[in-house]
Image 1 (cartoon, one colour):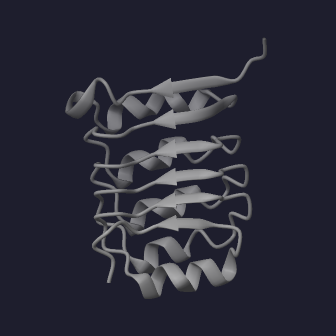
Image 2 (tube, rainbow, N blue to C red; image 1 turned 180 degrees about the horizontal axis):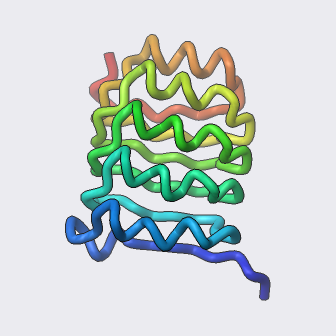
Length: 136
């Protein structure tokens, strides 16, 4: 009974490209955005930069890298982020250090190492970083 919006593209899959995100610049009340398994890239994430009320963001199995994560810096309400199966690295996740509400970060099968996760954990002690079984 409120105006919060959940947007889910993951069932559409690879046919969703950066162009599909352009209309999202007009949506300010989204609390969840699922872009998993789409063809979005870093360039497309500029279109969600203004969604500062997002609490949940799924970017798993996309073409997102460190460069795209810069667009998340203003998302102070974000509590869940999934970058599983992306090219995100230790440097990329350090850009999240200002997101003090972040509670869950999934980085399994990305390029994030245990050392990088530990560094972010020092900045955000309440953050649970899920590295997966093959973490180094």
